[in-house]
Length: 168
Image 1: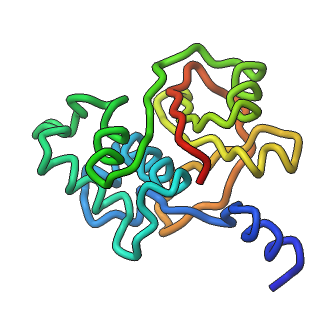
Image 2: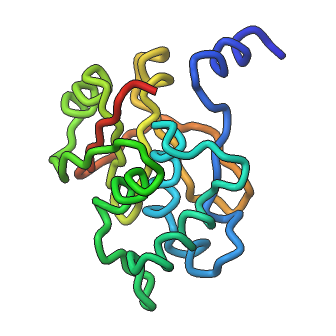
């Protein structure tokens, strides 16, 4: 592997991530950015890195636990990742839905928080380590019809959902 890619992987930086477009579920492909961002959160915090874990398996867990209704709306959205973590014997604390601006997002990164960012009509997972390395806010997006998507610079945001977890 190229030195930079090898270093990124050693630091926990992914060169690509799940896309909602790769889902087997129609609703996930159309509206699954929130669930996909939460699955990325669960992976990044080491709650679940098992071979079978992906946004579809997380969606199935949410459905079987009554956290997504028949209209594809989460019934306990912000807390769903924390509930999942608890069932796995892990700790992940939901800190709430905060306003987002560049200063707040950098504060989150530097404080070690994991952040799902709401952008107009969409949710993305903030790429903490890559943002630090590049000095620019990056996110793990999911809006693509392909099976995976590379991290992208984050340029628009309206609010953020914060989580904290013991160091992975």
